[in-house]
Image: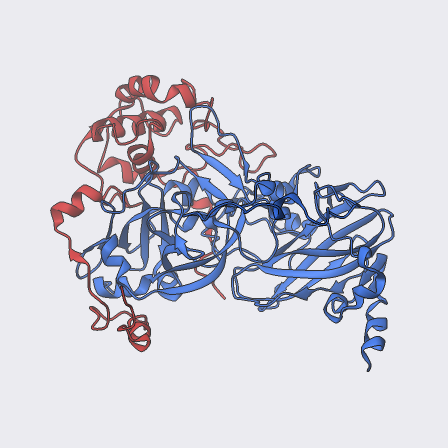
Length: 430
Length: 177
């Protein structure tokens, strides 16, 4: 097939309401529609006039070098959404990643979501120690200098708070941007020491089956972790995206448990106690458990389910009239790799397969994209992810049928965006 | 700092399951901790009461501490104010307005002592004595109708308490299939 024939075929809709083939942008077919037709979404005002031939910034030398870089002042508006904590609990609460203002799969460190239970401790790494004790042959204390001498590994993996996207099960659709609704989600390259190496040195007693993890924050945050997970893929993370962890991400060392609810990746890690049974801490009993309609609750619901969200178009990013757009979003699963993402532009009547941007990594955010020719009319866009185990992201209806509406964690149902003729995009239940 | 001397195969060997005592491959840079050092760090309390310190407290002793140090956020009767409601809600979990309190929801009484001693009061954690933490725990159990006003809470009595919602949790991990 010639290049022209290929382009022609990719311009045919592959699903209802103008969804085009995922290879359109890759084959260059978009160019045939005219340079201005791409209409990629941006929240900024689009100026029609070109810049002057010799703009001001070309008429004098620019800024000098700097020891630590910073972003353009024109991007200063891209900020985490910081929730105001209850009075008397300064430092507790969450901030959310502005997903709709980012692209790719990596979250910049300064925009990684936060969830703290008693603020961010100001830890001096010279004084910080990690103790491993309990059911071990040799209880051991590690300084940060010692930990830095261990062989390290790097992995790109997502972290999602298990309380993310709570609004999906709200009775009425909540207003907010993609980040405000789903932004307790980030993805980084984490570098550190496989936890199993240190446990091996301490010598775990055969009766040891769980690990109590304790942080050095003012909440002395604690969670119990199964030994099997610790030996599988747990990391003592020291670096995030190449630089030392930020204080709000657990400096100088945090636990990182790939694919599991964020709360259990205890930050500012200072103590690991090997135990026979889970300790039954406050967070794993009274907080991060799921209350079902019959009054019973699910406990140790660690793994984050397969899920996806469309980051663009999304609320707050106004459309710019009919034309060609890229629908783009993020998909992830605590069970492994994303196998497939499908997109609907007609409220779920028909679906088209999206292109996945390489690399597609296990327990990492995966960027998906699909061209869409919006005719300017009302449309409901939504995405549906399938992971490598074959598990399909559930509909909101199926999720509520299974777990009711009183649970507050692990909410991975499909949510939609309503695109209206007046260019507005709003949240809608589908 | 060079890590090139660490052979990848050695790291993999160290991760081999099942665990077999000490490792020959690891850098072994940990310093052995003494029981005295561990005692100062080990503040967690097992669901079986493991780790509970010497000391005791009663609801009446806890009431005055609670009024002074806890009520501003949780209400004088634990009804919830700026922060979590701690009392009541019995029988509400299967209704449209579930109240997940210590009395209605928390499965283990030992968790109260553990959490109060490690993280409360919010502005000044680690300031309660062990006796005070026992007393506040006793007061919260009494407010929830779980113990009597003159019951003594200590390392023996606390883990013996059967919380009302203890048997209403189903463990998802480990998976059964």
